[in-house]
Length: 391
Image 1: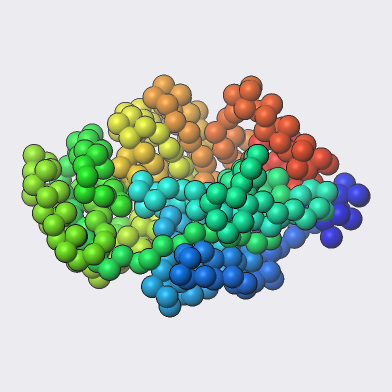
Image 2: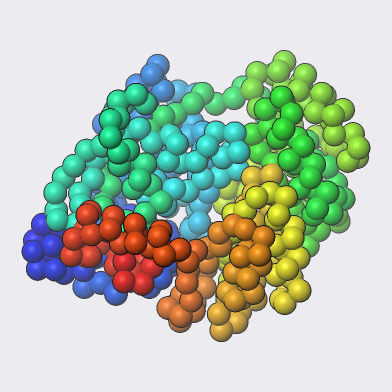
């Protein structure tokens, strides 16, 4: 199909289940192509910690299959669907890698692309190609599969992904430090990640966000909460949480969530439940952790915002009020001063048509991006303009 569309220079919108369709610049395309019918798991070698899944396979199916063998995806992908009023779990495995969607465990396990071993895909000419394979050390030249991760379907259509999986930890505990202001919370999270105690999640929820939690024991806390996750064997978790609490005693005495409550809390953050499905604008800002409170302060001087920090402060989820530009001018000014990248996740179509949704490119990066687009999609038919105008 893509070969004929390419020959006719017919633009096409590529989607999986459509859970992320309202994100990005609006696409002006003549046709739509969905990978949702491409389902199934043709390869799962549990002993080798490797799985291959067709692009349209729902994440829920992948995770159920992995759970049956005591395994999981290490990078803990977030689910953007609920932000757009959709039910959780609709996203497909192909779309997760196309968007490089990574959750709280990224600080210890890496991003989605770091677990991608290989792909099968179709470029803008309708040519099927394969990159990578079933092991890490099989790539010579350019690692195309990881290059496609984060391209949002603008370079090629992923039809099958092969990726690493890991065992589910036997025990999980979460230490929660109450009442820390943003700057001290980020300082503490960075200190925790710098210890040898293997922190696999570090988030800070300011006081204004805490009541939005679904967890009945936490949403009544009435103060900010800073959470650190520890995972592994039970004896290791017991030893490390005691050592960590002692090492961070200057920041107060934490209370603990057990296995069940920890799983509930971190699964809730995967669904971004503290960012309600409403008409407000949602931004995702990545930066150096210690700069994060400065960015938030710089933005909050100009508008009323609700935020929470992930990745020990390296990721800011920010809810901004409705406005003509979704607060883009003030947000990008703060990011330019302190460093980082800001992506507009949710806004009205008119806003997404008028502002840069993804972080604006430098002249050099823009030239490289256009050259890559031309190499993979010579006629520019795949998701035209979704990330950048004219690309």
